[in-house]
Image (tube, rainbow, N blue to C red; front, side, top):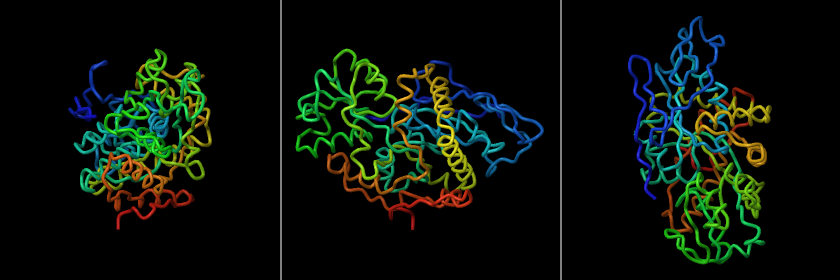
Length: 382
């Protein structure tokens, strides 16, 4: 599936960011945030492009006017949602503006990272691996973890009563080659069933569709189930679906990476202090989420509503939130395993992943906070 081309880019004009018109057809959206007070940043404050308060008196990190952060409107990107909503990123960046763009697909976010439209992004493991390998190891680094879990196979219980009944049925995944698509294809292969990865045809019909339309397709009977991340999985349950399998049950200790933090290598080299500031905010956000789960859940939902115009009802939000584990650990060994799943499915040539991680700044932040450092599973920079 071709990457969505970026249709707009924030431009600076006299210190103010130009906004896209509401409803403009673009893969990107500027995230409106609650206005925050200066909170000790300086004696005066000015609003950034999202309406958030930025201290005029504080110094800019690495001399930057802004740091552009990308993420998806999924609960598996809770760190970014909550960090934006509660002002953790802006607080850490001081007078450097935190600017946000949302995406619907991994390829478009990788394209934005490569073009400089964003500097740092929250993204799934498969697009991160694809972006790294397709550039010959020159485009990005994974600099931190964010979430584990939050992926389920949800089915129509009238049509599929057991795992063996999946054979011969129509199951949706979000996108060809995306993280959930690869996981489902590997699960199919483990059962000895055959599916052509590109077309999705075989013993199971794998239908690739945007998470936004999957609930409608499920409701209409066009699909029998879906292997999807939260909150889409819980939306299907609210439509009468049944969780047939939680992907966490397929992994040791029920942990596997679902969301990473990536940065362009150029930005990491040129602006390490800004990257460290974002990572410090990420660690602080994760700690706050785990200490205040109910408040964090509400904040994430508020940001989803600000981004899309519609929040999640409680019968979707509550179960979805419970299935996601927020973590600073990128769970590097599981990314290597997921890459091998893509190789087995025929969607990826044997990748050279050495150097995909640079956890130096994350571990620096973790050590300063008295937290345990994390491991790159031998896939870090030398």
